[in-house]
Image 1 (cartoon, helix red, strand yellow):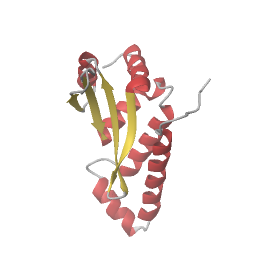
Image 2 (tube, one colour):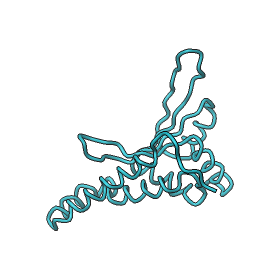
Image 3 (cartoon, helix red, strand yellow):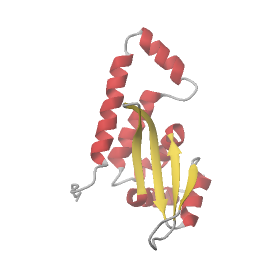
Image 4 (cartoon, helix red, strand yellow):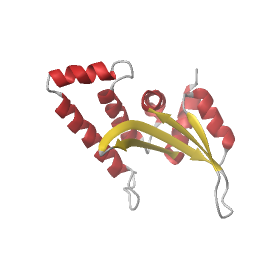
Length: 151
């Protein structure tokens, strides 16, 4: 079990080095993904010890330092975001969108039954529309360029 201090540290680290996104599959929104990349292998391995996910090694070109990336998907990403959410500052809005998106997806065991049930109730088009809107919102927040400065 992580302490509040460790969660706060991780949230600050994630605010600076992390990314929350929603994948695209055949022009439809897919799954929630979070990533944290850093040149310090120790911190990435520590995060992987605390949370489920994958570690990838990235060999760089042109005298750049090697880097490591921690990635978590769907439910694992949800668990990670829920743990650090109270302590986030910069990426709190993206985390909120990611968590809302994951609610619409459901858990692995119930996802297909849920979709079949929703189709019978003709609610599925509304759910798909909400998922697409959340995808667009997170894409907008993750854009590069001049971003608003929070005071």
